[in-house]
Image (cartoon, rainbow, N blue to C red; front, side, top):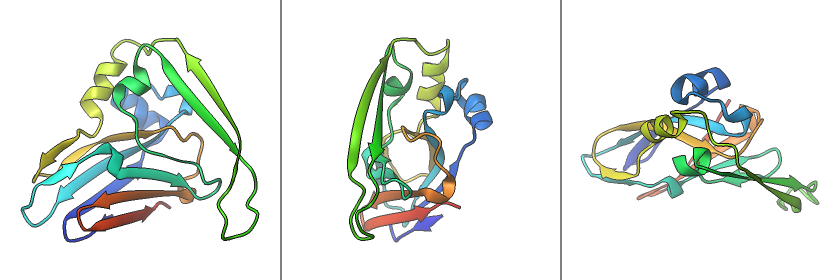
Length: 162
């Protein structure tokens, strides 16, 4: 858990079985899924926005904001994969060596889109705790290499997973 004066944020990485239980599919491991709990503090409403969250892999520099339900299980799925070159020095980020884009036309199994809409963290202004899932298009990444960054009204929070 990480917190500042405005919010407390807890996140857990879900395994494939928990993802299937929550939404009916594990999407072939194409996503890193976080179960989130966002708790506004001090009685002040918090504007929860998906673009406040970024998940980064410290092993290869790949990073992403979470996707909305239609991007995950809509009528078509766009998969972007990047290959990174090695670091030239410890202070320089990895350079993108290549990018591939694949459009998958296969629709998601019945009920998956509705389950996603029901379970994804909802964007809204609230003073109450909110829970939900965040789907990031980072696949097959070890938890110890992942860092979640969150922009809050008081600054930025950073959560390292183990």
